[in-house]
Length: 99
Image (cartoon, rainbow, N blue to C red; front, side):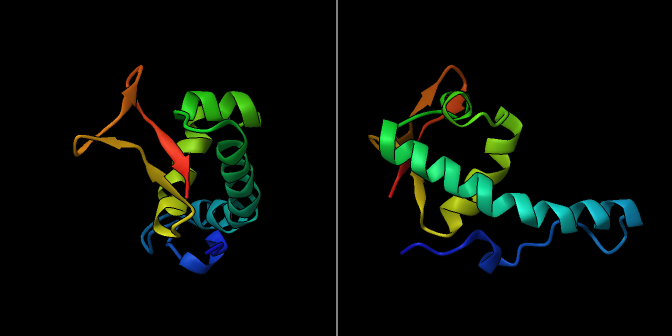
């Protein structure tokens, strides 16, 4: 199932946030789909990676990757790698794989 990230309708700013935060939140929707697709494609092509590895393959920062992985996981496009019921961690970062 390849659900677009924007279908998740996640709030990106609180009602109490200043107008600048709402403007930034509206702009971030444009990036989410592009970044999400790049992350999923990198995981499909290169296999399991942490946000550091994903960033190296996609040109995104670790912060950009971290913001998208939660949305991608909720959309069912990626998942955390688990071993013995615990998340796999490389250099302090959770490891992800494409679904």
